[in-house]
Amino acid sequence: MNKKLLSVFLAILLISCITGTFLAFANDNPDAVELNAQNCTVKLSAELLAYNGQKQEPAVQVTYNNSSETKALAKDSDYKVSYSNNVEVGKASVTVTGINGYTGEVGANFYIVPAKVTSLKMTKTEMNSISISWSKVHGAGTYHICVHDETNNLWHDFYTDASKNTYKISGLSFSCKCAIMVQAYAIVEGKDLVGEYSDTVFASTKDAISKPEAGGYCNLTSKPVVTWKKVNEATRYSVYRSDSKNSGYKWIANVDANKLSYTDKSAKVHKAYYYAVKAARPLNGNLVYSRPSAPVWIKAKKTVLVGDSIMEAVKAYKALPGGSYVVKIGMGTYTFYEKNYFKVKKSTVTGVEKVISMKPDRVFLMFGMNETAYKKNKGIIQYYEYAIEDIKAACKGVEIVILPVSPTTRTSGKTIPKKKRINSFNSAAQKMAKRMGVKYYDFTAPYKDKNGYLKKAYNGGDGCHWNKKGTKVFINELNKYAKANR
Image (cartoon, rainbow, N blue to C red; front, top):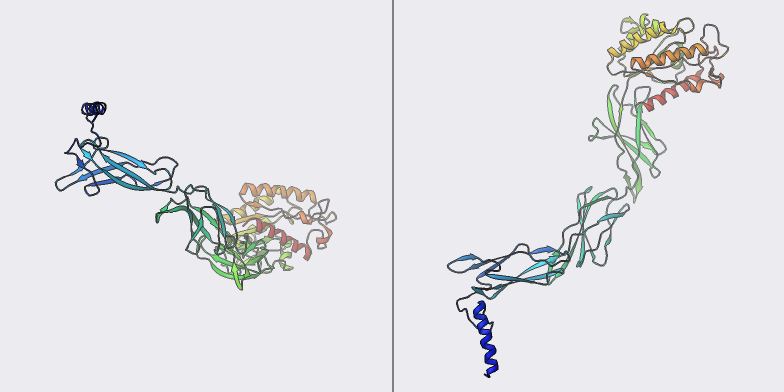
């Protein structure tokens, strides 16, 4: 060795002695413990990490084992750590190198998997398919689409390559609700690296036929009437009934496509029901049904029509077949309350008592034509109030509807009230209804000519009573009230 090389060697040796380090090529610490795969365990804080574009460095815990002891080693005192290939999706490495009293190297691997799929959304629905899209995921090789058909309790799995971030999920049934999730994965050295599922998106296939929009009311003969709007594809409708809003519906009728209502004649008076309607049409040789309409609540209200000869004409002309009446020619509010005109079983009773015996849910009262010609409003209204109080007290929850006196002709007789007198009484009756907490319904508009008198088309001959045509108009107007006050 020449003098120059010898000087360099001695200088390096001196530095090594001073700093406590050793030359790699010199075995200056013969007592150092060699770490290897047989006596050393390397545990990582995570073996699967989602790609985030940054260096991934899971924490390392090193344990030394031999026949006599198990010892947890300390980072930077007993070993140092280095990482490699720890950014991109795939296999990453950790190298543990012994220092100070330890020597040798031990390795461990962890994996970087594709990130969680984000921005999943439904883009289009059809009768048998749902189209979706999502944001592309870095490093993905394939996307897995997981679909749970919750309506039919079926699971479906679909796959598409990473060049796409849209998919049309086909082969579904119509009217089914699906829960959809997407995850990205890659295959590295035969190992599946699977990313976290996206957030769940819920979507439904289109109905084979639109569901009806249903409504309904109780008609004047105390029967629930279910109504619905036309569904263009429908060839028929099915009506269902239940005592409960959310369960227990049973089929009660099929209705032709050209009809948009059904009267439930089997309903029990005083009882309330829930109804739903389905539309149906042929599809691929089978009859398919829509989803049911929203439930419709209808009570079978016992309905009674009460009044004098005007109302009695409605009964006589059979304008309302099957209707329930308490009527008498010449009856006014006083005689309705005081006179025993009617039979209940073997007893003779007043009109008020007759009404109460019928246990009504809804009562239409129409008085005044006979009394307004010779009585002041106060006297008529007083007995109206007595009657209303008694009916309300005996029939809890009853719906009482006060009807105005209808118009008369300009040339009607002296015993028939004229327009000014009728208007005065009707105004008082309306105020009384509000004061008593009952309803007032003015049905008279169709009967009036441009001057407010009874139209000739409805005049029964004496200037105040209606002909048959006029009684039908009356029932039509009351039906409008019934439809608006379910």
